[in-house]
Amino acid sequence: MHSYAHWLANFLEWAEVRSVDLNACSYSAHVAGRYQSEMLEGTWSRDGQGRRASTVNARVQQACDFLTWMVEKGFRGVFEIPYETRQLTIGSATRAVGQMTRQVRVRGGKARAQNRALHMPTNAAVRQWLARVNESAGATLGLMCETVLLTAMRREEVACLRVDTLPEDPRDWKISNPSAPESKQLVRISIEFGTKGQSYGEDHADKIGPERSILIPLSLARRWHAYRNGDRNLAFKRWMDGVKGAEARRTRAREAEHLFLREDNGSRISGKKLYDAWVSVELPIEGWSPHQGRHWWACSVLWRELQKHENIGQLSSETATALLESTALSIIRLHIQPQLGHAQDSTTMIYIRWVMDMVSRPVSLDDDLSFDKNDHAFPKDNHQ
Image (cartoon, rainbow, N blue to C red; front, side, top):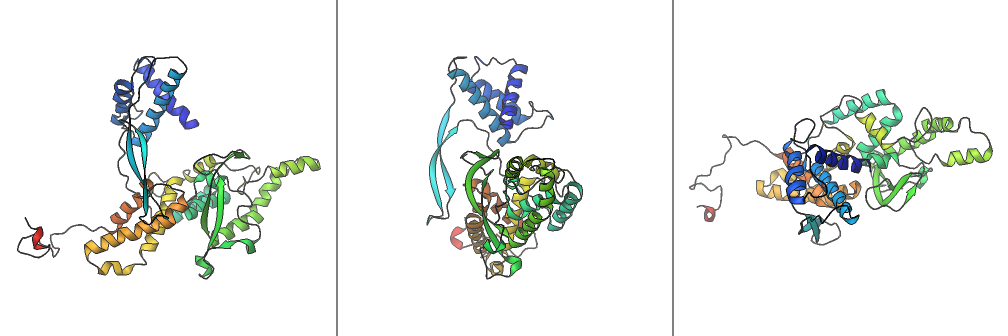
C-alpha cells in the first residue's frame, strides 16, 4: 500500500506540474503519450535519468486505476484503455512438454522491459559483507541476512518466520536427503506467513499467503535452533519484563510468535529492519539487496549443479550449448523455481543468461576456425 501511494502521488504531481486536467485527459495522449514517455526519457525524474520499464509500468497502471475509479464515481467521463491478448508460456515441472500456455490480457502500449543481466559478487566478498553486517547490526540480524542467502527466502518471509516453523525437537526435523553427509543434508520446512501471492487472512499482523515447502541447510537449522534456545530466550525475557499478573503474562507471551526478536526489547524484527541492516554497511557490489541475495542463492545452486556435468566440455560447441541449456532449465524448474516461489519462467530465465555469460569466451583471430567456403567448418549445403 505504501508503494501504491507513492506511485499515485507521482502521477498526481505530474498532472499538476504539467497542467493536465484529470477530468479530460486520455490514455493515448496523456498517460501513455506523455507521462510514460517522460519517465522513460528522464524528463520526469528527480535525477534526469530514465526510469526502468518495471517502475514506469507500475506507475502508469496506478494512474489508469485511479482514472478508472474517477469514472466509476462519476467524477469524469469515459476513460478508455486499450488492451490486447497475448500468449504467456509458463514453465511446468508436471507436464511432459515442460511448459504450459495461457492467454493473458495486457495493457496496450506498456513499456517493454529490457532483459536483465545478473552480476554476482564472489563468495569471499559476500562473506566479508556478512561479517560487516554482524559487527554493525548484531548477530540476530546477521543470522537473518544469512538466512536469505542460504534459503532464497524473501525478507518479509524471513521476518515472519514463527518460533515453531522449525520443530523444537531436532528428532522431528524432516531431512530430505538422510543418506548424504551431514554437511550436505537439507531440512524441509513449510512457510506461509508473508509469502507472495493471494492473501488468506492475517495472523499476528502478518499476511497469510500461499504455503510453500522449501529446503534449508541442516547447518542453518542448527543455528536457528541454537538461537532459539539462546539469544532469543534473552530477547523474550526483555519482552516480558515489567508485565505483572499470570493472565497478562500469558497474553504477552502469546504475542511473541516470531522466531527473530529484537535484542534490546524483544519485539519482532520487521522486513524493513532487515533491509536496513543489509544495506547499512559497505556492499560487495552495487545494488546488493535482499532480492539480489535470492539471485545469489539461485546462481550458486545452478552453478554447483552444472559443475557436476564436467563431460559437457568434451562435446562439440553446439551440442554442449544445447545440453547446457537443457540441464539448466531442468535445474531451474525442478529446484530453483519451487524454492523461490516463482510461477513463471520470465523471472527465472535470467539465470540461463547468467550461465551463458559465465561460460562464454571471447572470439580470437587465433582460433582454429575458418568461414572460408573451401573449409569444412560448416556443412556444404549451408554455404551460400
